Image 1: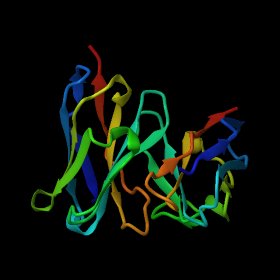
Image 2 (image 1 turned 90 degrees about the horizontal axis):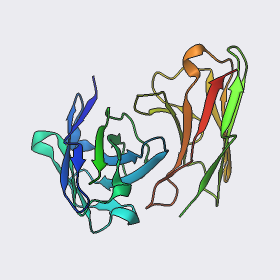
Image 3 (image 1 turned 180 degrees about the vertical axis):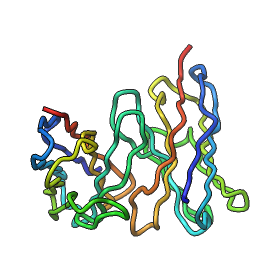
Image 4 (image 1 turned 45 degrees about the vertical axis):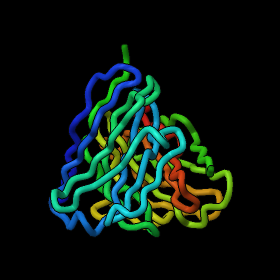
Length: 120
Length: 108
């Protein structure tokens, strides 16, 4: 069974940092692009970042560029999101999701999500 | 950035009825549009990709159509478990990958 399990969320003060993890199982992790998508409380979905199979290409939404870094460890079947200089508007549930490839960007499946709250 | 506008914001229907949800793009996305279903407290689930292809395990009552700027998700006969929020997403021109704001399908 394909499974994605996020962890690392929590309460952090504005300006703080947090590192999210996503553990993948049930498929060949190193063969897929991976993504982070977030959802603010009561709001819609927002794509955050994508990373290529070998980590050589990374893309971000403008609002997180220079603050967030997506990475992966294929030996550990894990995806990461390092979040620095966090702002109140970063408060959201963060989902990791599998992407078939750069030419077929849809998200399937999704993890259960991890909640990040940025507040003083 | 391609903006996706979904309509209506809320759709109230009864089980057994036909649901038609719309997604309009600010510029052509060819057929590079996907649809997702999200139930309360759950993560989204892929329903349709490339406008009209059902994802694995998705019931045949779900169908997608359209190309260019206008797309439709149709649920032929609503089951109780279909009441949820539906999002469209484009991959034609990215970054950024963008989603619509969602349509809430509620029981009448």
